[in-house]
Length: 336
Picture 1 (cartoon, rainbow, N blue to C red):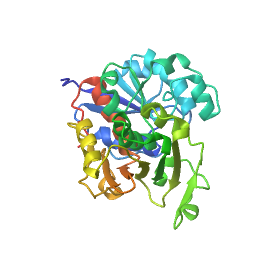
Picture 2: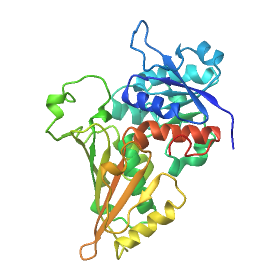
Picture 3: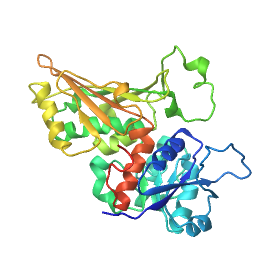
Picture 4: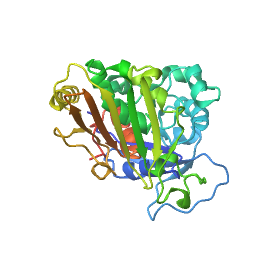
């Protein structure tokens, strides 16, 4: 186990995920946050009385400060620009955007409607969902941190699909709801107070950018999954209600047994007793994914409810979990 401390650079620290990273890393026993400024001539107020060191986001600064890891809480095009420079400077990189998640430049261009400018790094990047990719994450220098919706969906779906208890031909419906911070901090009409408060709306119907992540990790085909994202009038949290028809299942306990076998020893997946399901209060400001199931024996209808914090397990918390794996720290360091 590694007892040495590292300097951890944060690019995009003004955004919600970047600010959450700063908060989490500030209490980490083995990491010291460093703010990396990639915007020229941008003035901003101090973050606090004891603000971390702030440096330009340059290879020279990363080398001179001996920064071990750089978190990119930036848009995909910025991540593609900065990741190679940070890697060449000797730092490992954890990218919180969608720049390196989709495996091929063709897949990226299809869903993001723009060409991928670093296909060489796209091939190298390891998908950072620890519960399924832990060994590869430990050996990697570039991690593509998963999206928030796919994190909850894949933790709920993949064990059941691997156990072959889902009637895929009947289709799977993922009804996903998120707090407004999932849309980022940049001002827009759709996320303004008057549009969101006392309201509830669906968005990116049939073409959400997180769908290919769910498909790639779960093994589903696009025709087998119906995914709809919806905006809740609250600041943080994701709750996904997933509907499917089960086969070779007699009770909710059978479904729970599959999860129990798959997630035995996992520090950040919590299972609810039969008949109980999680809500957002249980996971807000944590790195947990909570799962609960219901099952109707007469019809074979099954429902899984998955809850995470979109800024925790859906972004910054999971990024720190990945950092812990990459540097040999206890996986829960700074997160419990």
